[in-house]
Image (cartoon, rainbow, N blue to C red; front, top):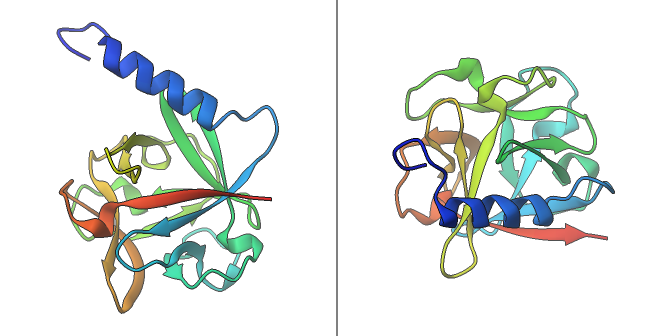
Length: 162
């Protein structure tokens, strides 16, 4: 958006996201971190609101499979096993805020702007906070939000699962 007008590049990205995450037929994806090669996972497959979203070795279970629902240029990332959304805990603005799952309440802390870099990796930036979905570190499974940077902890691969 520039001076209140949608830029052509932004429009093209929005269209690409819409067609990539077409929700006419539920498609599920594994989301793998560039730095650690681990995927996004609902800890222990628990269904409770507030359950941590972590990184874990891919096992193919439903708590590691995600559906994307597009709305107004942003996506909600919804777990196949629990039906709950990836959520910035309490919509807090701080770096290091935990990423959890929560029932769909359409809060801005459940919507993500998705961008793709020149090498094909994706970044998810919270609509509520402007911060990126990130791995805490190689040995810490908890996902957090951090200020956007070129850190590979913030870059993700998305692979459709058949």
